[in-house]
Image 1 (cartoon, helix red, strand yellow):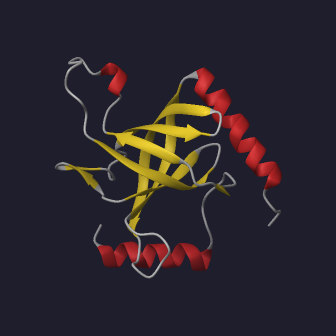
Image 2 (cartoon, one colour):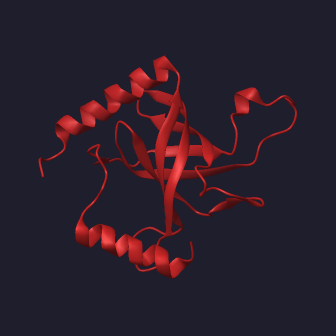
Length: 147
């Protein structure tokens, strides 16, 4: 999708309403992103290319990721349900997850943020990481003002 149609869809989403079913809450958390799970890497000496960023918001089912670039090497981070491995730094310690990208948009220079916003759906997490993440999100939801 080129930039103009993406902007039109983004504007329509703001005008018509958001299709998201899970309530999101703002949270700025650091993360490291790779194209595949570094724990499954068969060649222990080769480091996977990674990208560091931060979240804009989180929910029980997904995250909004802010990254400085939309590619790692020649690989695009978004499109066709691309799966990414994310190591998210929660205040209680890191959790790891695989996410599927569902959309992305370039952030305008006039905003507080620069780079790209990637909307991602959580696809896989260990049971322990899921429990830790869900506790964190629930705690944020309790503090969030009602809309």
